[in-house]
Length: 350
Image (cartoon, rainbow, N blue to C red; front, side, top):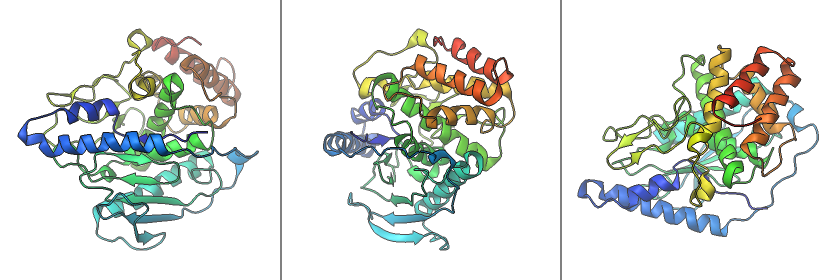
């Protein structure tokens, strides 16, 4: 089975940036064109067997994190030169140390909250490469490790600066080793949404933020001050993350009323993920408190419970979350009611 190349910056945003011809965005346009070419070549070449999920995987006892950070030193050769291992002190290089800390924060969320033993449930070592490429405008999970670019400096800064980005990309690994959601159409949008959900939860857990206190932004801190925007996506209000002369307006819909039918971006996986994203936010808003508690448990149970088909639609996923809420909290519970109401609000039929 094909393991998808999962990157944080949507192709539609890179295409928009690649078309810029203003001198002040020459580096950004060139970087975007190179990133787009990399996405295409990587997707065309990468095939890998999707692992089976062993019985009892979700109940494996969590172990300590095991992190290794490499430095590509501006090349596109992976993994690069080893620069920091588990337990070693900071290096003074911002990207290296941010990646190291971000991997640890993500590991702690899964271990402490969900009892998961690393990304694969079996203690997978967490590898990451920083300083990938020259002015590389992306971060991605390649099926085995994390990779971070430094950004072009005109539109994007370094990709290790956003904890939600690190959490997002590692969550693709969790999905890969759990539900193996196909990376196309609604299943692909769910794949992206699961990464946004757990990327947001990592950030909220580290900051000890309640659902009401959190920003619900994915990729906050990636843009330079020149960009009119706060992040790549907003889970709270899809379609409002940016509105910029160069990047255009955030195209994400917030309900099925404005669902985008397209063949681009594997059927709109980065665009239509706004719909299930908002559903999760609405559940968290309704229940209050910490989103990693009841809402996070429902979504995690849905992802790892073994009931999701690889081609799950929004409706199939919605019904699975409602079933998980009943299993965890009971029929007619406030959690069950919140889940049903959230999907009704975004116009997804259960």
